[in-house]
Image (tube, rainbow, N blue to C red; front, side, top):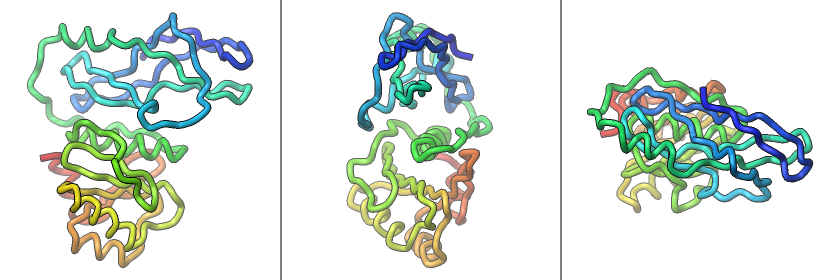
Length: 230
């Protein structure tokens, strides 16, 4: 459990007690952004991918990953970005002895309530598989949200319509131009011709259930889930 801090809403001046969410590192240890109790919360007025994520280093294994920046919803309607301490978690990790990568632990999902949660759930799963340097994809897909890791391009479709054949083909073509593998995550599943085309192109397909657990749809996804990043 992360330590709570007092957060004042700059819009209505209301005080809140807030604790940062805890996420599972690939080694199985819990990690959480270190909050800055002296910092000032800011109201989110627009969204930028780079501002949505913050680097957090695991004190157990020294691995650093990007996790959603802490936010708090005030009853007045404002969404507050909670200030994060820049170096505390990193300094602890630098002092920790480096360990050999541990076997993957049981996946701990992120509950999906919003489109942002769906992207976070997919990113958490890819980190669990062993992919690093997860970030926003350079090219925006026709549907959903693109995220990328080293050697991988992923598409997350949080809409209520099944992914189409064109969606799968566009992801595959974009990945080909970047010499990367690709994987598709959908909340609503896939049209039959999209599943068949994914099998022929070698695209792993997953369905995200509302618990945030990716469920393999084809054998390629089963293999990726079993072996992880290579």
